[in-house]
Image (tube, rainbow, N blue to C red; front, side, top):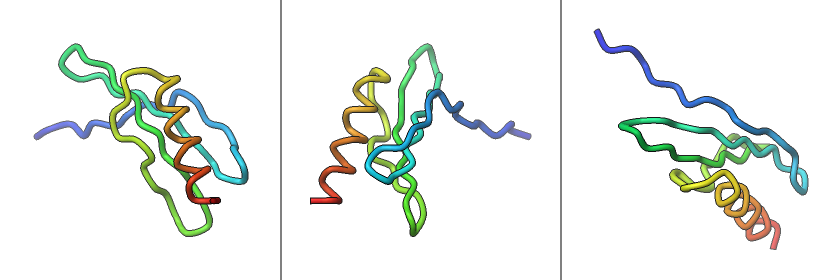
Amino acid sequence: MLEPHYPQKVLSFDYRGFDIKITIDETDDEITYAAWIGYDYGWAMATPAAKSRSEAIQKAKQWTDTKLG
């Protein structure tokens, strides 16, 4: 039976009223970061596979800024 794979939370912060969580995933000697955005109706993934934590944060903030107009 396969073991489930769960990404690890690296960073969590609020930005303009949204809850942003950055996760890290290590597979096959590759590290990727994902940005999750929490808001009133659930969660959205701002970026599924950034190469760095700073890139994931930047894309999460861009996603939030776009939603707020």
